[in-house]
Image 1 (cartoon, one colour):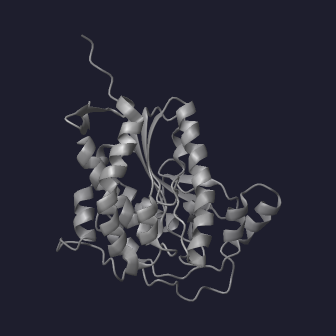
Image 2 (image 1 turned 120 degrees about the vertical axis):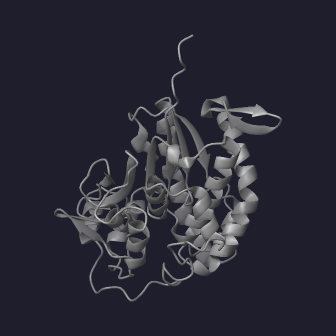
Image 3 (image 1 turned 120 degrees about the horizontal axis):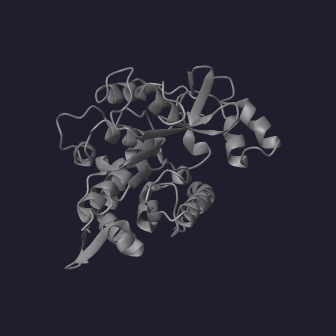
Length: 329
């Protein structure tokens, strides 16, 4: 019999700040468990903002189990202090200049979304990115890219508003600076310039950029989207209500991207926070003080969420049911 064709699988990890990173690691750990699969084996890794940090670490060979152990405080070899290295719950005093005034101009011309245009008017952030550089440099030598052949780090060109996949479209930026560029949250973290271009957080254009997989030869896509929620909660806090409105906008983007993948014949497993996770998030995804609550909640909710997502994708995602547990087919 002819040998069966290997299924090509992509892993997409979206933006979501400190809370989204903790939630994503819990989900990834459960996903690996139920699928009996190593996320580092994904044929393509796409990461945006906090997801870029995780994709960069995976591309550099760091296991999900190592990331989870660090999140839980159970490893003595972590290169990251989860309580201090992202700064506090509020950004440092920003610079007295716009993040990307040209994005506002592009918005007036209808060339970028209103959200992308508005983010350009935020002041330029001045958070210390040295801990991010040190984290990546501890995995991939400074000045180099991830050894994974298809690690795509998503950023937005601050002049045009176009999405750029560093590692695919631009291949001469080192991984440490690429991760910092993808995490360049307007008003919080500084933009990163390279080869005549300035880049900011890829999440200002798309929370996941999963649609870039169309035409890539991928058969299956696992989309982990911390900023999307098909089952929103109803928070009483006015600030949380504002966050949920932004989340609905981002959910619609993920909806369109997933639809484009499915229209192209790519099977999709979509994972996003549920109401309990959203309650743990609160309204400030950058607040490190909520990280432990987010992680504990996600470790509780992830088993059911992953099982439902895999069952929804059916055998198409490369799993079969045996004694009630999803396994690799």
